[in-house]
Image 1 (tube, rainbow, N blue to C red):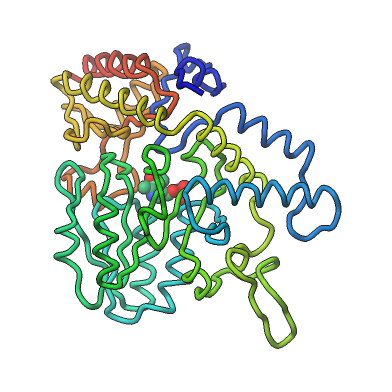
Image 2: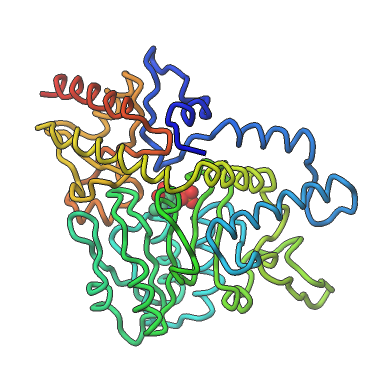
Length: 406
Ligand SMILES: Cc1ncc(COP(=O)(O)O)c(C=O)c1O
């Protein structure tokens, strides 16, 4: 299927909406992407035709539902190029997946004074669970800074590592600057020192080729809602040997082998980490989103986003009143900026009047905001459905806002 932006946009019904009498210009895909009609219909039809609880029933519908649910796991496995389907754990989202690793892997394996390296680019989701661990176990968190463009060198990671470093938890792509991290080199180096690496793929998954086997990371997490799927579902990929040894962190039905009054044995991965009735509808919806994505050819999607990002960078950098953060990453689909003489919140509010949806704030990345010396930025982020017209609308609405504030 060749990439045709008009056809893609037709698949996303929300893009036909008007906001305050204007065409919707949705530039907040980094917060959450919109959903194609194929995913919306699939979820609806699944509930009309095939829905029942999974894994436990012997009846027709339970089998149909289980097949769709486990089929989605297979799709995620293939999408990530993981080795085994058992390496794919469904969670409620990336945040949930990182908490799982912190509780199930790090809690029993790290001791006081052990070190975890995080980057200054991290989203709070990849900070707070490790802070909990610091509070509980007395581990240390060390920070690797980026440069002003959000780039991190392997060298700067290498300089922080000591014998006590046990985990590096790092983003694939900054959710503020859109910068891409040299993960493969970092992971190779980390493994040479027997350090495990968790990759937060929340932003990277939708914009970059992601091959888990090639990356060789130990843990990889992402949320379905940033990949054109529903909210309430995420994925933890972990190497099977790790999952096998990790203890479950939530208890309940489905995750056990046997329960007696005095003892319990747990199921095998991934089930021992999926206590209770899972988010069945969201999981199958994610499977459909992955089909939608792959059927449109990843390379074409990435190329389109690349072109739109360059166009956006170019257009914004021609505006005198705009300050771009991370302006060297011109093909980044996430663009942070500020407007001279005005607060990002005011800018976002004014341009919303013209139907332009951007994000303004700290983007759950306060350490990065401190590093950049600001409390917030405005952020425009691109999805596969973003067109040149969206960027033109952003520029026109920003020009109007600038007139108001200057
Ligand atoms: C880089 C990054 N990590 C983690 C998250 C958290 O994702 P969720 O809230 O879906 O768990 C986000 C969400 O914005 C993100 O951008």
